[in-house]
Length: 227
Image 1 (cartoon, rainbow, N blue to C red):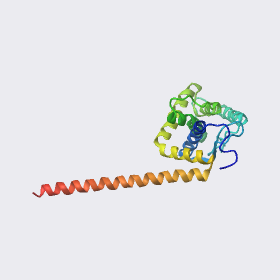
Image 2 (image 1 turned 30 degrees about the horizontal axis):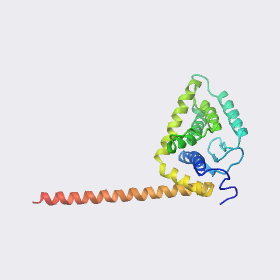
Image 3 (image 1 turned 45 degrees about the vertical axis):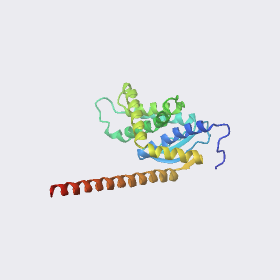
Image 4 (image 1 turned 90 degrees about the vertical axis):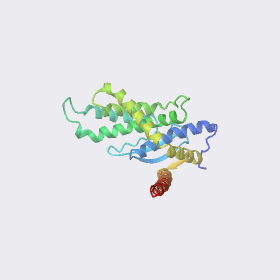
């Protein structure tokens, strides 16, 4: 075990809930092609857990490092809003920032989405900074402010869909994070790769079984036809 883990005074259930939240961020970030540098459920910087991740083109590191980081992100987003094209102008030139902002919203809302999938009857852990940052990025991604809420709902659905479709990976990440307290980016990628390998093996096994059933059925049909 690493220093500070298990966390004194934290119940196993609370520990799991925090792991679920952080693994939600990590899985969706990797699913969208962004980098995850580390994942931890050891308290620090005013937070009970952290997922440090980044991606092009802005190279913003979405690390949960305290309110200062949230304010920095809000400031950057406000500046991006001010340079948005006027009505009737193309948004193509800013398309990278628009997509980057939308992906950030999906990743930020993935923590709560994972909570709702695994613990649907419990209230959210209430990671307020996630919602504040997601709202800031959403305002950059849309052309008009009233569309912000619609985009947030879409991004929640996207995050939930990615997590549901990859529940095996989510469960594996949670188990590993609970066991160790901290995972590096390489460890996260290795877990994901392992799950994909298992999936491929199962799919190949199912394909072979289906082929055998079809072969038997064809042979039976051929035998009947020859009578």
